[in-house]
Length: 319
Image: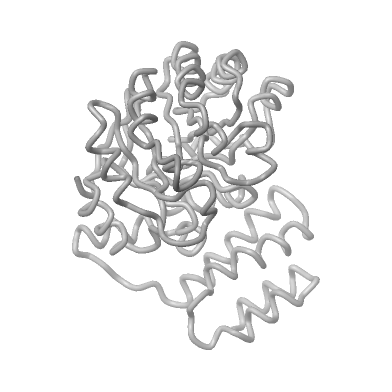
């Protein structure tokens, strides 16, 4: 498989087979608006817990606008009854697809058995997914890591369980939970997932930062699609970069492009929140976007030391 347009996950038709992952505390509403300027494919909101969703019926992290479709929601939790109710709520909210997170390694998630801790009980992954599938008409998918640790690599088992439950795609991050984000994403297990799958789509994830990385993971694993995580922080326009690469129209992005992108992002934050959040968020995101650029040190220092968003805007414009 390779990069392609007109990609389907179940009944959902997508512009391409490049998916943008949910990233807690990063892919909030303003950042999703920024991503949508460049990416025509699937974008996910930040992950939400089933319990919170059922209790509150809605959440600010699930905010989106009509022009942001196709839009996906991701939930985590261990209880199949809550999974059914959560899926119904998300469908009623207008989401195009629902993903079950079985890969988040963060302590506050795994401590109650959610996220990557689900990998300890494949039968429960099946039960939760089956209830989600039974609850809705839109596609249900699952995102996993390859196992809890080196002694429990269970990719094949989860692929089979997800397929039997009726999930339409499985995203495989090629690290164990115990790895966190250290080491390399082991794409050989994504390849194994693809070799195991019969009908379910296999989405490769992990260490995809450039168009070349995209070509390499497709070539090595034969996966059906890719999900980009931290790569979208470094290059929110990466989807266009990938499309240009595969269509031989590859071009570079100069400083003026990045400058205008940062200014647009600040605009989106201020329309949704306050100055303090804008300062905090632009410090984080600019650190990714400006990374590896020559001669950028003074601007990064100015952004990180300023307590005025207007001053930050002036520094960006004049740099």
